[in-house]
Amino acid sequence: MRHPEPRRHCADRDAAAAPAFASPSGLLREVAAAARTFPPPSGFPGAAEMAARSFAPAFLAVGAIAATILSATSGLPAGEGAPPPARVPATIPGRILCEFWDNIGGSSVRDLTASPAFPGSPSETLELATFEIPVDRGDNYGTRVRGYIHPPATGEYVFWISGDDNSELWLSTDEKPEGRQKIAEVAGWTGPREWTKEPGQQSKPIRLEAGKAYYIEALHKEGGGNDNLAVGWKMPDGKEERPIPGSRLSAIKPPPIPPPKVVKRSEPLPREPGHHKMWAEILVQGQTVRLPYLIYLPLNFGKDPKEKPPVLLFLHGVGECGTDLQGIFVHGPAPALRDDAKFRERYPFVGISPQLPPGARWEHPPIRKATLAVLEKAIEDFGADGDRVYCTGLSMGGTGTWHMALEAPDRFAALAPISGTAVQPDLAKEKLSNVPVLIITGGSDGGYTEGAKRMWQALQGSEPKPQLSVVDGAGHDVWTRYYSNPEFYEWLLKFRRAAPATAAGRRPPVKSEVGGKAGPGATSASSAPASKTPGPQKPEVPEAPKPLPLTTGPFGQWAGTWAAAGMSLGTAFAVLAFLLVLPRRRQDPATAARSARNMDNPGAHTGQEG
Image (cartoon, rainbow, N blue to C red):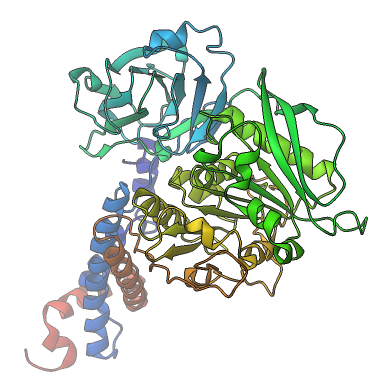
């Protein structure tokens, strides 16, 4: 968008005093005009004169064109930025607030708004990086996504909403929620980002002003089956953003929610090495969750009072759900610890393995919060090292590993999800950028393989680098090659949490225990440990895929390279041209006139013809 009027007037007033290079095109025009108007100082070589006068505009043109292409991929005009968001109290820029209400039947928004828990007692709150909720979160829940939207330009905007099931989109005439009006809705259901299934999904054109904030709210109700919700718009220049990115949004800060608390657990606390069955009751936002869990104490537990053991949280798959903890001995570390004495000797962790009842899932908010509460209580109960806490899981538990980490990104020193699906890759890139991750998947596991690769790609640029092990020919049960392999656990132990989150909300990078390197899988996913058969034998290492190139859009990498090169060379020649023409700016009018005539007749200046 253009600058506000007072700024343009100021620029016009000061133009005669000093040229303003506010954009590549402005710099190009200034240098080109100067090169045409003023000759070089007497005696300066003609070739340098022509280079200074000709090459500066040429290279600046290359830079300006490339910068324009580059800016087109990011949605901003060349040389300009989006206007700053209007000031709205108690907001979080770049996010929008999402609230969920669980255990509400029906598939109509009216079922949500009629619930006694709405709006004051949401089951879960989170901040979204785009105007879209996680797909297939669960059944029988309602959603409200609300905050402020900041138009980048004045003009008419068209909105869309997609959702499963019934969904409504509301927009206010200003930043106040009281002025909101319904502008679009999904009467039945749509697929994710399916924008044109029903005519009511699209709003009429709505005029919005740049620099203002508008309250926006989406309501959504899920009954059963698949579920989704997303909002998009088309801006006055015709560009569509579907869904709307966080750069256009700011979130309302939610009221504080009391943390989950273990109110009761089994007694007495075990102190002998080996497996022990326990249970706990956890109060999570007004409801009590009962969670059985298996505790493992290592062979040297309690021998040295000063020694703080590391902790491993293991999350089982859907086939191991139950209430008697026997399912924990089907897969994962527990069967190897039970059956292999040599393996027990090399296993230093306090192991925590909760068991879900049939039908429950790790991604359900009360389960996540209850599990993390049990984890914190176990760290306290057994005097464990809070900076060496690791999380792994298989299948549903592999997916659950991502959910636990996103719920508490500052809790874990390292993660190792196995055979899991992708979980909010954009949010993971932001929240888990300093957490070491080893992603393990079979090469023939369909959507699980693709989900692992998506998460690996999303975490590119993290430090330490994310590691991906794709075992060629392996299917869903690839975990059998890892959980009985001591090298898998040795990889985890190479990391410790450096510190809790800082005041800025981002913790320092995780420390490595060995020379700053990540150990197996640190620089290449191909070095991650794996073995074809259970047991501590030497692993056979699969080769990891190469990362795919990530760009900012069509021509993004090409434009970025040429923009930088063109602008750098153009700037150098511009400085040379400016040094050439600066002495002529100081000439009196008569001398300047003679110089101009000399330019029109080069032979008069050099004593040569032509």
